Length: 126
Image (cartoon, rainbow, N blue to C red; front, side, top):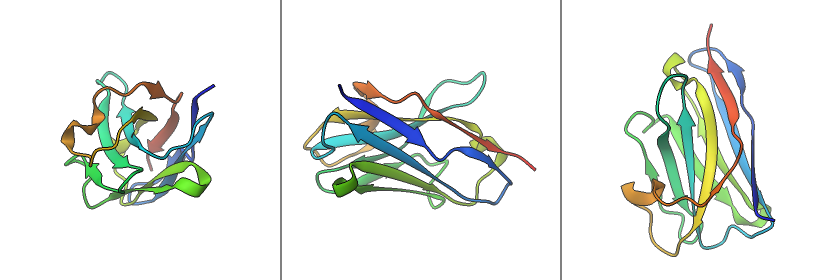
């Protein structure tokens, strides 16, 4: 059974850092596009960052560029989201999602995700 499990969320002060993990089981992450999404209370879900596990190409939402870094470890079947300089507006439930892909990622990467994790809560507050 294909599963994605997020971890690493928690409470952090503004300006702090967290690293989220997305561990896959039931399939290998080679040749997939993996996206991180977030949904804040009362807001629509938005794509945050995306990576190709084939060639490592990445894409970021403007709101997180320069602060968040997505990476993958194919040997560990895991994708990470390093979040630095966190702001209160980054508070949300963060989800990872996946779809098969051999293409270099672009801003269209976030569409068509077929597999989703259950999310991990990130709260940025003093």
